[in-house]
Length: 269
Image 1 (tube, one colour):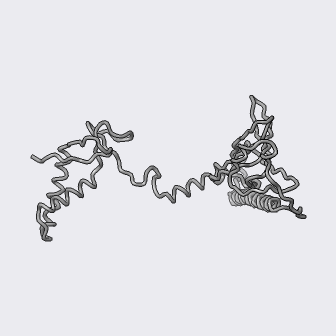
Image 2 (tube, helix red, strand yellow):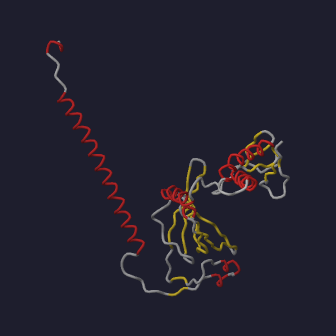
Image 3 (cartoon, helix red, strand yellow):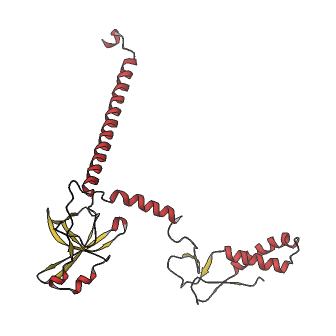
């Protein structure tokens, strides 16, 4: 009789399961490996122990019926698949590239340059029944959470003595943003302006420093102009390609008609 082998469970202190089939399979593997190993100067007992260890390491983990969720049921036991990479389905680098490829078409490319401390005006599209309207909201950007397509900003304002904060996803198609330029530039030395929550009245206002107004277009305006020119050029290329394809189809149809033999006059009658 082959002694039953105790297989280590997945959960820490759960009772170990016993199975004669697993022990029989491991013992047969040990017997098949023991012969070539013995010729190398290793005793059969050591070869049996080494092969048994390798078989246990390669075998699936067996736990009791009270095992974890997601195990595959086989009779009175459950076998938990071992996946060292988790649920990534492959390389983490490949998964990151896939997520980036999916998120890129959903991201806006005409956003204003957000800065902590700036005053922003947000237009939120609200749908009520069959009608839609734009709800304005204006306040100070006190925090920016950068997470790709899920990037959000926290805008705070004071209404009738009460502080109101709202979080807006900047890449949402329902939100439009506009910068409110004042006479000066706010002086900010922090990445999060949460200290404004504890201030009331004039103390809650940010200090500003006056800067000379620059003549000409801003960097954002130049960027938007370049972006519009790029989009126009891409659209023109698409139109030209479509026109060329239509013309090629027409030429091919005309050549096919010219190459086709004309029917005799008797057959036409």
